[in-house]
Image (tube, rainbow, N blue to C red; front, side, top):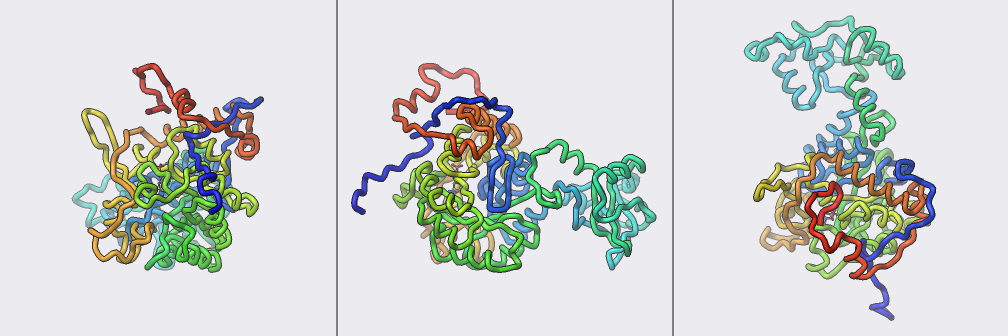
Length: 498
Ligand code: RVP
């Protein structure tokens, strides 16, 4: 290296965006951006694949807000696939593969299924899939808890002939049938009378409530899920695909490595995964991004060490401050037309615009979302204040949690051959973050902040922001001036915490 100290690494707190002439007001700014080569999102926000951040509930909330959740992989393959399934079933124009029951099941069994999938009723089918009835709350209302285990579905269901629709029915026709027959569920059947889908009134309500939701072509919420590269990672990828995952994230601390590049290339070459986008990471250099692009990644995730819970930069002494890392990676990604995800290290809404101007297309958030209602885990009370726990996937606790015998958080840090738990080298810590209420209000503030950035820089779209945005480098004095100073805060702001 000819000039080892000439290469300076900068992060969010080192830079500021310059104001520029504007004729855009914040409410006109459009926040849609490219997540992968094929997937577009209305909000450029992802939730981290961490066991204190993203399970089905978070993924549903993020997709409804127009972003995307990436399900963590510190759990068994079946459990992770079930989480994908939950998201895909949660809201849909049409449920293509509805949960069903049979005439000989008991009301107690139906009740259990309804609870598990959070639905209020089930179509009843016979062996070959022929629709013979429907059973909903209305049919079960007068069956007591004592009778439920012995009462058969056939005796209480609403039996055929039912109001049904053909596959491909239009939204307007569905609404007309709901109104005309005062029903809330419309089973769809093929010419032979076999059940081929279900549309519920609840899904229409939700579509109106979440107009920006990230949805697939069938109207189902989109979801991402993490895999590793070691052991049964390939089986995990297959199970996630079968459950309907939209994007697989090969989620490691060092994406520019043989195992990661190989599994990405294998996924991209296999026609069985043609419908699934593959995101690779993490890297923090131009050459690292180029390696993932050459392997075929549909998006590249950037970040080595910026995470709030991450100790890689002190334990290993390795990493690149995040704004420089994103910029360097963009030198490879932009000419290739591959979107970049800036992962970790964001503390305030203003950091989103900085990441996008540096070259990212979306950002991934851990600590900013870990304190919300939708993250896994309970509220913790300390001195009357509310917190939720948050830990790095490289923390000792996370490394010791096994997803399956051969795939777990450990391969994120390439420590699959460590003989005992005592010999693990942690690269993260365990802690807690302040409780922040529902994801909806956090995302609202984050997107609101981004719209203000777009207003100040005169950008109507994210593309314009990326083109027009210009940086100024600031000093420690500048940073001090940027934050509130010479005052004691007495009222909590919804979007600012020191
Ligand atoms: P942050 O948003 O700053 O909390 O960072 C979250 C990111 O940190 C994750 O998306 C992931 O890339 C990274 N991470 C997760 N675990 C660890 C660790 O234990 N070092 N780092």
